Image 1: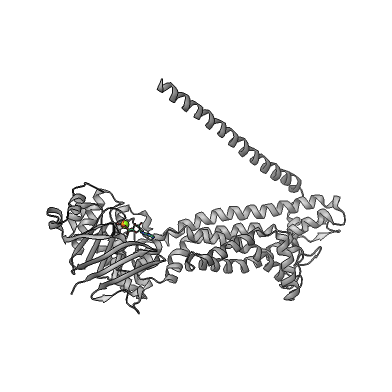
Image 2: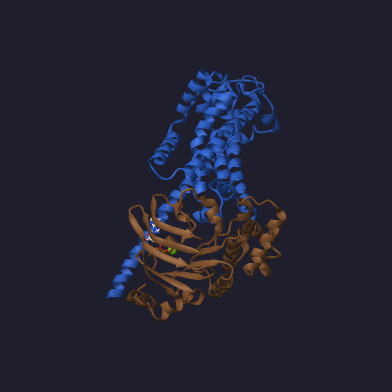
Length: 294
Length: 250
Ligand SMILES: Nc1ncnc2c1ncn2[C@@H]1O[C@H](COP(=O)(O)OP(=O)(O)O)[C@@H](O)[C@H]1O
Ligand SMILES: [Mg+2]
């Protein structure tokens, strides 16, 4: 009697489990399908225009022909500039938050603020960047203003990933270091940072991927509609991939004719982000092995 | 003069009292075991001597903790240099993710020693003291993570010895190790006694009986009994000690 009862329970458990598995599997494949659909759509449409010329030539004939070289270079400058700004500040802020501030109201407040910062729509960052960097500080529409704006956008991400990386370093290593008479800073520099480094780098590269695709923050701060020359200083305007894509899809001289170029640009952008993600993984693995050995 | 002493020590985590009026005097070159059920305050007591409890916020200490007659909680005591006088060994082996050599050299480097020859000598002699030299001398440049758990723990002891402390504090150093590695560590404790004063937390009573000269039995933050180990185990003066060592409560 009892055994049959148990049997029934375990059978119904089994059914529930199978049903749940089925739902998860369907959802999982659904998401994968969408992802593959988007990717293959862009690849099929974009692959035909991609050539050496496409990535090394200036746009021609009202951006319906030629390449996207200045937009690629512009995006690279902006990414580098924003990281130059966000990385040191973000990492130092995270070290301060995780290693120096003890848990309390102040820390909760700062964390709340950084979290909120990352929830602000990027167009608002663009507006703020225009008001502060372009106008108030007088940088004008420039790579500097655009980099700083993108840097602000990346800052919460850098802070959060660095904090997570620091938190992942087990306290026993800190205690061992203190126990040997090391100071706090020695402990951070010689034990904590090297151990957290692989994950910090991962966070950095992921935020590069994020920043390189942003349109709104650069809209009012740096992006040029059409600029068939490379920037020569940080006070120059520049073209950028996401904005270029926006322009030739909405307000180009001939939208229909620029379509292939738009897909090519999208593909290049996706490739950059993809390469960043792969690089992040590879670097994390590499440094993880290296940390053990140093 | 005693090597280590605590006089009327009370210790609080926030409002909850973890140690109540603890008085213990420890002679130089002896091994003292701290035993008692988990949560009774053994680790807290051990961490008083190198002020590791300072790392936990919102704690209070009352009374005196002395090393060589000097109050370690007195104003003006430099905590970093205090910690150089004491080597600490933790529950789980926790070598740094560095090479075997750099693990032992770490304490020297952070204390400002730059003479590579001296570091070399000190690393070698420390590893020899923990009887690990023959096992690692050919792979000093390899990651410490490649060693077995028992070897890692001996490396951690070598790391502590390298800074030439006079006191070694061990918090259940064998609880994560197999019986053979445990035996090796116990043997080591016995040998190190001639040069160091050792305090070892253990919840293994056989271990306390094997390695220590004196044993302190803690219960709920109080020191119930502190006596010569053989006495305490064969002839406990307090019933609670008797109950604990005969396994009547855990
Ligand atoms: N970091 C801490 N914060 C608050 N309470 C703690 C902390 N560490 C230990 N305690 C408390 O102090 C008491 C003694 O703990 P501990 O010294 O770790 O005991 P033992 O080492 O004998 O197991 C326990 O009640 C424990 O819950
Ligand atoms: Mg403990």
